[in-house]
Length: 357
Image (cartoon, rainbow, N blue to C red; front, side, top):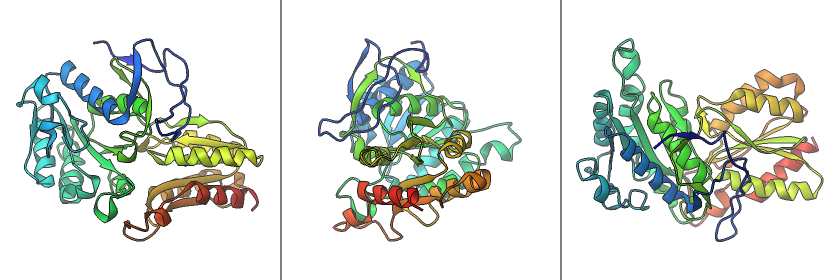
């Protein structure tokens, strides 16, 4: 199946869920061969295509053989066989270690960590092996065929151990890429790009959106570029930057701000490492203000890196301090989740404060 770039054809589409949970409109492409698809089904499509187009591709992890806890791998083992889609022991370190070895032999290893909260036992394998494999040999060998999928973020009832957003840990590691999609269309195209990228990638999937986000998704094979942020809403007064499920919350804040005469430019970073500094800088030079929002705790979150970089590049153009609306510096709570989350109202208040500085 021929690979198609989404930049070449099509018109824009708005993503609106069955429950009225809106995400932003984007200039992505819808063809007659598109159909309404939720995020987990888009992930499933991408994995089908990856396995079908590359006989060296393998999918493995805890419970993936029967479809996984979120059903993202449904039907893969039946179609491609248990030698290419298979369960592993409950050992995250072993899953990633196996994936590194498989990728080092020239294969496409797609490893699933059942929840991002449980990726920490594999931290040494990711940070000290996968990220450095190419460099320790002077590029004589590598494990660039490794892609690590992990559901991350809030889900409404996950509590301490099923709601974390650990992306910032991995953004401190040269040698790997970190990618987070915001929608089904993005998830499919970005995941295929990650699987085919010559570097190891950690691909975090916003589990809040697995069934909530629904949009038209092309059924064919396509890829979206990594390390390119996207302006999904143009504005002139303030720049908002986020990723993953937080984009839909930020868009709602932008709509409410617009009612009060504030024009917000909203940017989806998509790839956190290496991130697209130029797009963010260009927007901030235009608006003079920046707000960053993510679910992870504010201290040491990736928003701090964005803030520092933009201050270095745009200091004389800033009209106000960079604002961050993020999770709290506490373990992710259960019953107090609504107080922890960076909500629409918190973002709207920060937009007004920044504008009125």
